[in-house]
Image 1 (cartoon, rainbow, N blue to C red):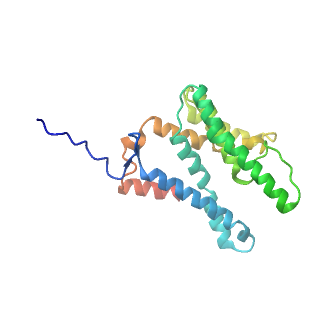
Image 2 (cartoon, helix red, strand yellow; image 1 turned 180 degrees about the vertical axis):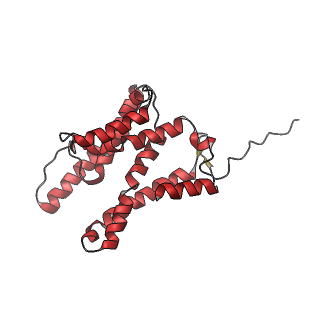
Image 3 (cartoon, rainbow, N blue to C red; image 1 turned 120 degrees about the horizontal axis):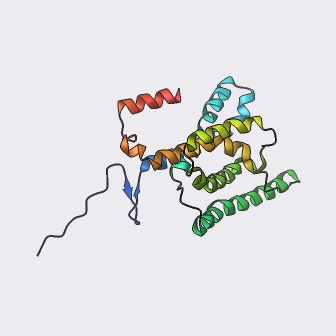
Amino acid sequence: MSAAITPPPPATGSVRTSSGKRRVPFWDNARFACIVLVVLGHAIQRLTYDSDIALGLYLLVYAFHMPAFALISGYFSKSDPPGRRQMVRVLTDIVLPYLVFEGLWTITKLLVEGQANPNITQPSWTLWFLLALAIFRLVLPYLALLRWPLLWTVVISIGVGYLPNIDSTFSLSRTLGLLPFFTLGWWVHERGLVERFALLRVRWWVTAASVAAFA
C-alpha cells in the first residue's frame, strides 16, 4: 500500500480557512489598526480645542487612516461585471446595515436630544463610509474598463473640489475624494504587486519606503 500523502502546511504567517482560501493576518491587523485609529480620532476630537498635542495627534491620524481604509477595501474588491449576485451583496452587506444603523442613530438622537430629522441621503456620523463603499463597489467594474483608471480617479478627486454643488449628500464629496485610494488598492491586487515584490515580508527597503511614505 502506498503511503498517504500529507498535504503541505500553509505558508508561514497565514491561516487557511475551511473554504481553502489563505487568510493573511497582516490584513486583519491592518483593519484592526484602522478601526482603533477611528476610535482614537473621535475620542480626542473634543480635546483639540484646548491642547496643541491633541490637535497634532488628531491631524496625524486623519491624514491617513481613512485613505488606508479605502485602500484596504479596494484591495479586496473585485472588478467583475455587475450582475445579480454582486448587486445582492452590495444591498445585504452595505446598504441594509447602513439603513439599520441610520435608523438606530435617528432614534438615539430623538431620545437624547428630543428631536430628529431623518434623511438617508445625509449619513450620520461615521456611517458615510458605508455609502462610500457601496458607491466604490458599483463604479469599480466601469473604472476597470478605462486605460488609466488611477489617473482618471485622481483627476476626479481633485476636480470635485472645485464643484460647490457636490457636498455631503450621499457622502459624494468624501467618496470621490477617496476614490483614488480605493482604486489604488484594487490596482495593486489586480497586478499582484504585493506577492511580486514580497511587500509583506520584513525587509529593510520596504521598511524604509514605508517610513518615508508616512513622513
